[in-house]
Amino acid sequence: MCLKTKLIKLSFENINLPTSRYKHFTYIVRRNRILSCGCNSATKTHPLTQKHGYKYPFIHSEIDAISKFPHKISLLCKCDVYNVRVNKKGLVFLAKPCSFCNMMLRSFKPRSIWYTTNEGEWKK
View 1 (cartoon, helix red, strand yellow):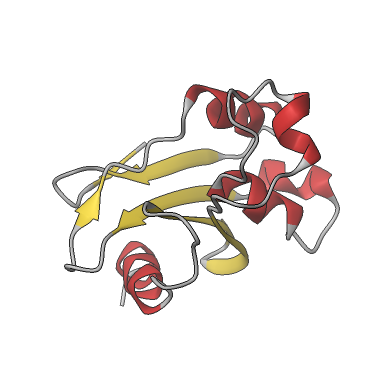
View 2 (cartoon, rainbow, N blue to C red):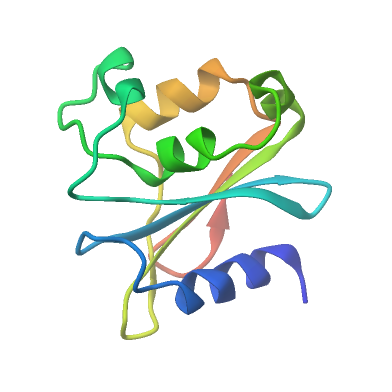
């Protein structure tokens, strides 16, 4: 199974994890190995949201994945970031990082940032 298909399948398996109505998942991957996984929350906050000027302080999946990253943060430049958004009906939606997450992710300089589209495809 290819990595991108595996990430979508994993998102559907964990669909009940996020506490918000939108089910966003972010995976930090290096050499086809998932190093960190994050999901969004409508109830929790994180200091990174303030640092990067988020309009709403709730945790986005990108922040959650970075806060759970088990290695030195400098290793992020050797990783790829994948965003997936799914619903309980089995559909994949647009998971493009918001402007705040995009700015925050780029500050860590990952190799690439991928996200799902409304058509269920991947875009870089």
